[in-house]
Length: 364
Ligand SMILES: C[S@@+](CC[C@H](N)C(=O)[O-])C[C@H]1O[C@@H](n2cnc3c(N)ncnc32)[C@H](O)[C@@H]1O
Image (cartoon, rainbow, N blue to C red; front, side, top):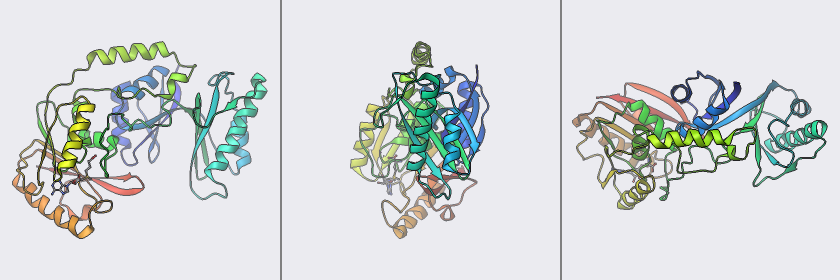
């Protein structure tokens, strides 16, 4: 039986995530809003998506979506849902809520009202008062309020979104969200037989995601998925799915390199690569001077916000572009904050953290 699912992803990368979801499940999805997709999928797809998808954040089984005018309306929507299929009598739950738009209430108010709705609905159907456990709930009820629209569902991923991969040992001060890194690798169309470099590699996220992408490595560096505690799902089915996927994983030695101006980041990247079980050639370099003869160049340049000052960073952009012109490459994908400083062929606008950022595609 198919259920309506809500999948969250990076804002601006909905098309990339839709393509990935189609590749994994064979199911088409549509954009619900910026950073959220909807699709009809099976319970098995929940396992497949959580365990193998690299560009999405969370998979949520949708229970209701309706317009509302007041918190009272939200309470009524929730109270009308039968939760007995999704939460067992002895299980605890917690509500996580996110709100966007102008309202005279906060997301904490939403969580409180939704929590009361769940408790009252459950008491009416099963004559049991459900336990609330905000720190370690068995079931996470996730809801979104967007302007006058309310959505509620059961989170199958958990408090740690899927971009928290679990392989990072060295935390670079400006480390990139691995879901964005993975999407950039997909945009580069990197293939097994090609050479690849990230010349501003920091902690090595892009290089690690590149190898994981080509070698179809699943999310096996973590095991804290919320679905383990969801009893309406058949966990034996997950174990079968996982076994079949794991059997096929073979991490090959690819021609992937990463370099950074600072030795401490190079060391950190090596530590992360070891933890992610990949072999990558990390070395110290100046990206404005090294020969950039690689099939694919994928990089996240300093934004000039968190590290470095704007003027210094603009100089760096200028020299890097001059150097790029001397290189021979097929495709170069850059994540930048200020695209006006670059010559490029295509641009994808994304939201990174809460900042606008741009993925630039430069054809060699
Ligand atoms: C935004 S960070 C990259 C973060 C990385 N994507 C990650 O996930 O950890 C940019 C990196 O560029 C490096 N960098 C700055 N100038 C450089 C240069 N001229 N050559 C090489 N690396 C440089 C910085 O040391 C920093 O680690």
